[in-house]
Amino acid sequence: MKHSLRTLRPRRSILILAMLLCMATAPAQTSQRLNAGKASDYGMVYSLPLTAVDIYLQAELTESQPGEFHNYARRHMDIDNAITAGSRTARLVDAVIVPRGIPDPAQQWLAQFKNGSNVFMTLTSDNIPLAINSDTEAHIEMPEIPQSTEFGATPLDGDIARQAVTQDMARSSSVSKKAELAAQRIFEIREMRSDILSGQADNMPSDGAAMQLVLDNLAAQEAALTAMFAGTTRSRTVTSKITLTPDSTGLSARTAARLSAVDGLLTPDDLSGEPIEVEITVLEQGSLPVNDKGEIKSFPRGGVAYRIPGRARVDVRFRGNTIASREVAIAQLGVVFGLNPSLFSDKREPWQVIFNPDNGAVLELGPAQLQ
Image 1 (spheres, one colour):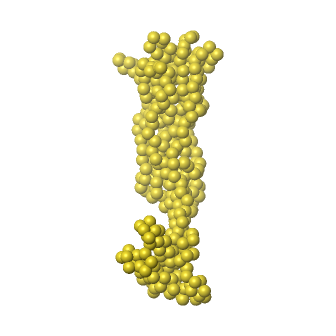
Image 2 (cartoon, helix red, strand yellow):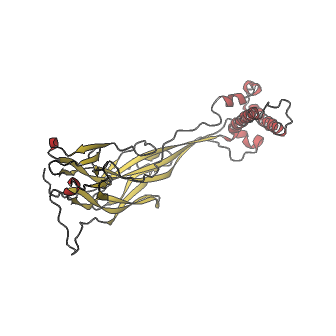
């Protein structure tokens, strides 16, 4: 494998849409360690990263159902806003932007060191460099990734709701009569709670814990009976991940997903939803280093290649509003340069380097802190 600098061919932006339920945090990176030894002719093969941009979209889905006695909510309970028909709605509640390094098949390199060197390299599981002569990995601040949740229980779910239904309510065949009895029971429960709190109940609980248990039970029964008039609403959240890999010119604004007011997050080609647009705008292109005379430095012979990334702004827009924006370093907006391999194989004072695996940049370079 040659040590010469490899350049990327300009190509159109790649858009990969993969709607996946995601975890609360990004998966932990598994690292591996390679040693420059005789068996490998004191060389180590690795890949420089491309920067992919993961965008986590979170939608909240809400379902509403009318209660059995919704027609009597105003008459018996003075409830003016009772739910009268079933409905389902969805809204976009969050968008989180996370850069991530992926192997660049066009940037595979061989780091060659002197015979007898004790150099070692730590890499990700897909061979992106993390460090040389160090087990320390870059500390990269991770934003909190939104987590999908399930529908919660409504007051009508569970045994308490069944306990709230009296025998007279169960025996009655008239919805109007059941509603009247349910309202009476609500007022009885409120009176019982008032008596307990004031200490005037005939059978007071034996201690504070028992009192709280009774009060919680009464509150749950009241909530269940009230829901029979007012209706119930429950919500859950769904998080999906979109992965975008821009080229050296960024990424023009495009529809990356859609949101339906009923069904939630959809693929870009489903025109039943409103578009969620993503744009990656180049802010700065990475450039090769120069010497004191302003001349571009030459790539070191047999150099350990790394990225000098550029910077871009990632914007996520919905309904004409920017709902998330972040500046990120992107490998493919920059250039590839190299570190002199003799830095790491010096027997008296070997150096270490720590890379950012998301974009291939050098984060720390200096004398190795070997044990």
